[in-house]
Figure (cartoon, rainbow, N blue to C red):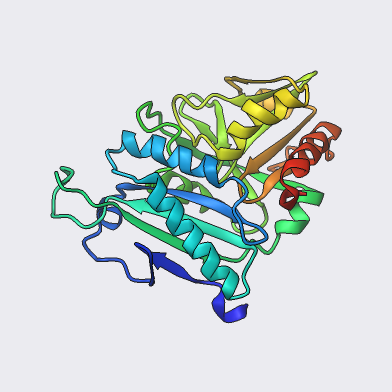
Length: 284
């Protein structure tokens, strides 16, 4: 697999070339989904596509769900023929080629890009041993219009990620009011007493696929109390356990925050992880 770990498809054709006038490149006008590939399929594919279509409307992007789904299936089949059945597939939808200026062209043809990469090197170990987080100094700005959307503008995360080297696994991000939002690449759930809390995302952050699945399906079906609320960093420091989650890594225990406090891998986190694994074994 060594020479085949970076494959891509653009508008249904195997290619790594994108037009230089693409509006995603010029203005960040687009969306992306980072999806887990397991046994040649994407476990949460329908949920990824549903979010994509929902958020595309907010960004005035014409997305044909059936066409995008067909491209994903075609790309997954190509990977399988190449002997690749596990890894990460990134789906990018841009506003396509267009003239200069911010105004969206009246005749817009969205561009669909698919890219493959191998799973992170620390993938298997972090889920078992837990992640160490750095508390980022950078604060996420409030934007109620774009909050929740996984759009192509990720400068906030880039600035935050450059605050540490490799001594931590991820960074915890707060907003301008010092409220917890997420990590640079995952959502967060915190256990307080007999319930689990996750930050509201009305002002900032990404409405993650696995976060929504936990809130709407996994927790209710396993009689686990979960709710969204505002969380101060002081709340996090005194919690009994917590975890991060995204659709690539699944559920990962958090065991350290900038050396201020350490946590053991909690029973509640393991319960969530096992419940998820029963539905999608790739996350075990």
